Amino acid sequence: MTDRTPATSLDRFAADKLDTLAGKGLRRHLAVTGQSPKAAGAQITRNGRTLINFSGNDYLGLSTDPALIAAARDAAARYGAGAGASRLVTGNHPLYDDLERRLARLKGTEDAVVFGSGYMANIGAIPVLAGAEDLILIDALSHACIHAGTQLSKARTEIFPHNDMDALAQLLARHRGAHCHCLIVTDGVFSMDGDLAPLPAMADLAARHDAWLMTDDAHGLGVVGGGRGSRHAFDPPPDIPLQMGTLSKAVGAYGGYVCASRAVCELLRNRARSFVFTTGLPPGTVAAASTALAIIEEDSQRTSRPLALAGRFCAALGLPPPESPIVPLILGPAGAAMAASATLQEAGLLVTAIRPPSVPDGTARLRITFTATHADADVDALAAACADFTSFTPPHAR
Ligand SMILES: *Cc1c(COP(=O)(O)O)cnc(C)c1O
Image 1 (cartoon, rainbow, N blue to C red):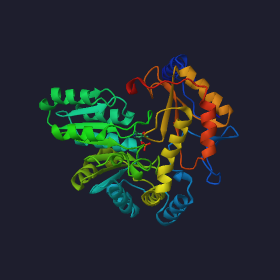
Image 2: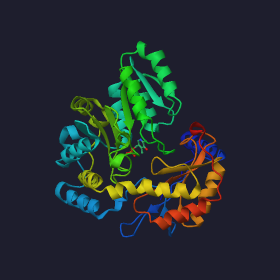
Image 3: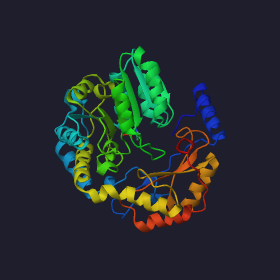
Image 4: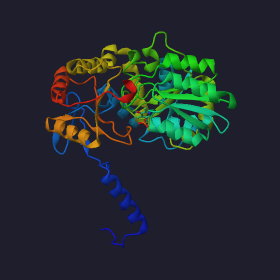
């Protein structure tokens, strides 16, 4: 039984805020969503219905893979359900070593440091690398946790228009000289648009201005560059001294990482507040992530399939070839995106509408993601169901 107390100013504050969001069509709701390792393919259940999921980030279907589940179960049996303390105290269980070594090998760096999540990696690492005397330059469409990390850093932050290298060069020319260090941060694969950052050009600019380039490869690892991520989508791979990412998308588990030199990783282990002051990941999660990385290293058929399926979809609709397994159909108003999503759901296809503030105003969209476990026929069904929507190219890509 709940106590019935009169509405407090706190409750009225919350209710008013929610009303404002609802008035703008931006109120969000959680939907209970189940996925079962027993269901073949990328299926989920919602409100008693089974839907084909084109909205997840589990690009390789690894979250329900029997090998990951077995690894998680074994690790929990051996080391317990939780880590019990921060990694610097007693939470650094034996499985971390293997995971960090695998990450460094896959990314081609000396070392790697695993955080509690990708969000925690960015809000922890960025303030260690840049402070009040320094300059941070970030792409306008970079992920929310990059913006959050730069705010925590107290560095001067300038935002350049999406993938605009002339604008980046101008900012460097104008501001670099007045600052001690400079960090350039970008998504490697943009989460809501699916395009790649022009990493060779960024690495050149960084080298010329003694700036440190950092990529967020949350949507690159496992699905582009032969599974090694956005840096390896280019030949030769550009120099990127800081590559962060997540273990919760293509890797199918949970956690975040920064791959870098030994000195940088050791500094992060000492100074990143979201590393020092938080509990280690559960052993089962770390074991599942290690198992996934072994699969990503070995199974090129699996890592190439999501992009191939995105290509199949784009070809069917006459869209430009995709650069990643993320394909946006930009519909404009939030209402149009919501209506399109509802239409697809009627047809058994789950494609979530993405609205502001996750994307800029006027660019509400269907964000479609392809997974190695989709059947070709699933993709063809989606293309047929989307044929009537009128979408437009994002302004920055014109
Ligand atoms: C999802 C995402 C993150 C956050 O990773 P989590 O492990 O889910 O916290 C960071 N950056 C980008 C670009 C993302 O898409």
